[in-house]
Length: 165
Image (tube, rainbow, N blue to C red; front, side):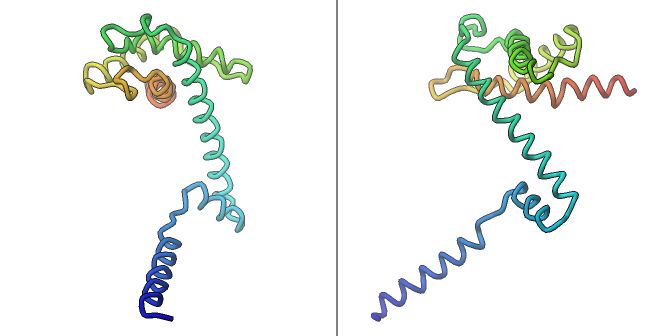
């Protein structure tokens, strides 16, 4: 074997070995592996993570459907999203779509309006940005996802925090 071929083979072996070590395992894969080894707490965590992944994918699908069906003029002014108005429409759309699974709105309309205002204020008045697509228009699919995340991550936790005080 020529010296060049030997060097090339050696470099290939090093790269393939390093790549194998560099291939990271996701947290889900780690818990699935630990579960298979009999670790009960990892089984529970893997199950929760798989369920969360299903909800995330479902929310993405609903967001894409919402983005394709809305009249942008109803939710945008001068290429800026009207996030407070959109928040209420997204929440209604989400719970209508998920009602057959027993998923319902857990806060009053009054609290929901406060959450909508908080979301709008955070993006437009504090961050001064919002999700956009390649054309620079509001990205309604991403906004939908973020609104649902805000509802579950901020709105419900805020209400729960106030009710436990």
